[in-house]
Image 1: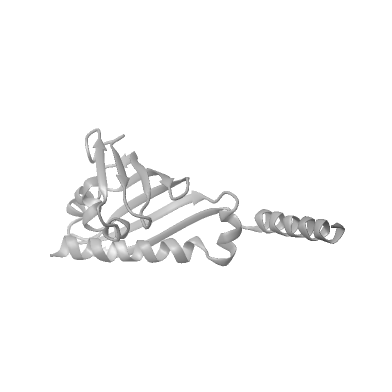
Image 2: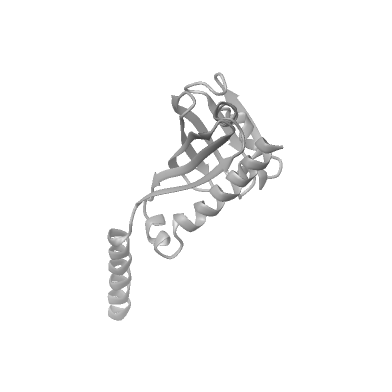
Length: 175
């Protein structure tokens, strides 16, 4: 019984140490150049409803249900979604708009786990018909996700999704 107690205390201490040591904030972003004018790219990405055409999380979910509140593409517009285990359930709210330049959204994931993140997009004109776009997600990892991220980083997990989404966006806007 005493050995079990010491092993349990050692394991709890080790996990607490990993949590204290781990990086809890994350910011994952990817960039792509789209052969379309900046105004066209920004006008498309600011509408939450358009995400089902290019966002990899939407494209991986079957029978996804979405509901919208407010005016899509405007400040405080909200999209609620519910899908399979790959996309879960949550809301996305437009929280910041700098017309033609920046769009930020607050993402509240309800299922499969509760989490809050900031999604962001930035556009920059390279040439009249070429636009650089940055798509990223920033957030905080609470316990136990902070420990899990030591072995499976958010950079790896979310980076792949951001890359796929931007490739889909490029295909959608350049067709």
